[in-house]
Image (cartoon, rainbow, N blue to C red; front, side, top):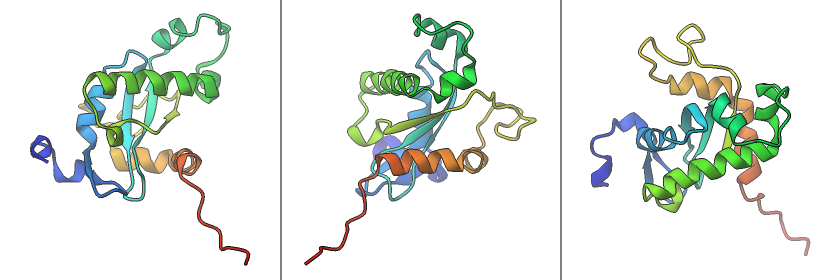
Length: 159
């Protein structure tokens, strides 16, 4: 817990296993991935690991996808499951290099082609992310990611 003392309490999230993660600390490392232009790490108390909402760095993303048609829109790239896997893998490689524990590694990603600006309300004038507003805007996509990676609920036995 010592490493988290410098973080604001609102950036600490207690995960399902009872351990805390510091969202800003994770974000600063995952932003070092060259495929990321901006991101917001998101977690809920019932999650086992966080996910990230990511605005990809288009030039670096296209360079990492040499077989992709150059005319494919960024929106279509963001919807492509192979691209999501690539971005997740690269982000987690940065996390592993920084010594992140398993609970700090990303479980999934939501990719968006939309740049976050102060006009959109998703970042401040100083480019600080507005975590709640981002979570609200991408709520449907977040739920899909969290549901996709969550274990199915237990079904009653048929005895």
